[in-house]
Length: 472
Image 1 (cartoon, one colour):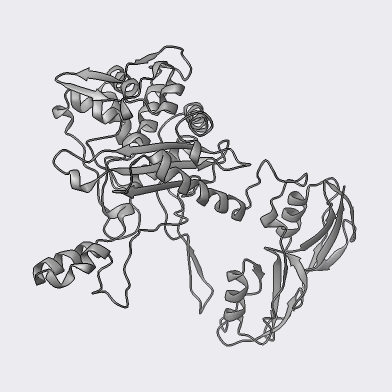
Image 2 (cartoon, one colour):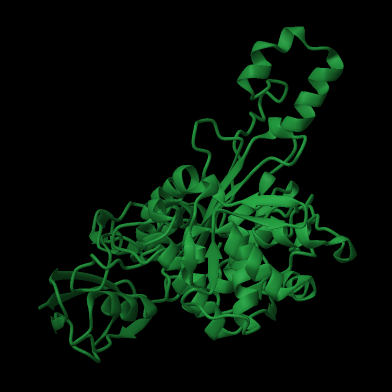
């Protein structure tokens, strides 16, 4: 999810099923026993397989990822601070009413600050924190973060959450709620709430479609971003992100780290509900990056993982790390290992412009956009039939990935002159952005900052022209 806009950048469920063979079960165990099942049992298995995207159609216990929401509540209400030494004490378990509630693996964390308790994912500390906050205030913030409502995503079949009625919450329910168990939410609700923390406290409604384009007329209908509310302050959100980074650098989320990037995260492990041992554990990891101004939030949840150590820190975190390691460079988010130009390698890949002349304008645009090019052309009612007469840059020209390609047709061959901006002293990233804004392209040599440009500031050139700069 893009926390700044609410855009769902990717969403997937596994196992899925083959739409071409909808009656083939996707579970190997069920498939092996298929001939022994009754028709009713087969129908039930198939209906479960068709159950939809678990990200928003089914609920789960979030476990310790939900401690981020309890942390936000405590900081916003000034109940504690991030680094008050000895604020919590863990002896490995706590007795609450008639129950003994253990920390994960009965670990003894001892004296801790809130930051350390979050890093250790200490159940005892969060039980103590929940007792200080109280059920009324907790539920106030749960509502503010959107957990008592559906997110409003424009897809059919979204489920709602399942919480205790506030009047039914006793000491045990308050304790388990404080560390994320014995209530159910959807993964979509959680990533939306954590995205509010990433977005300086502002909750956005998830958006699955940003724009609808009429291919016949070129008319565009934009689906506007929807800001729901300010849930917590900018200061509180910043503190939590800083603590999430601590979870990855010094706490239980170390396997969620990505070399060269500041990553924040939180692990989650929830036990099966009483009487439902067969459902197994649910492990998860939620991550945001970069910590200072997050541009992406990822949640991975795995149901009933097999193995001796069913923990989000060991199973889900490494998966998110691998995803972040590929996604951040793809999104052109600079790492600490970027060179002096301040630009990632993904932005400096040299590619050859394909030949799209003699294709229809619609086909040419689609080809180029699918390859990551920025396409500039005049809209026409005949996009599906009119052919591209000329392109700038020409075919096989070497350009940087994401370059601008200008298309001309027989119906529209109007050439527009562009004034070249001053690029001196800019980094490669800044120079590329400055030229892209004017529909111009860039090639370069060296590293550092621009010391010369082959076309001087103020000179008029055609759209799509390549400007060469030297960096030192």
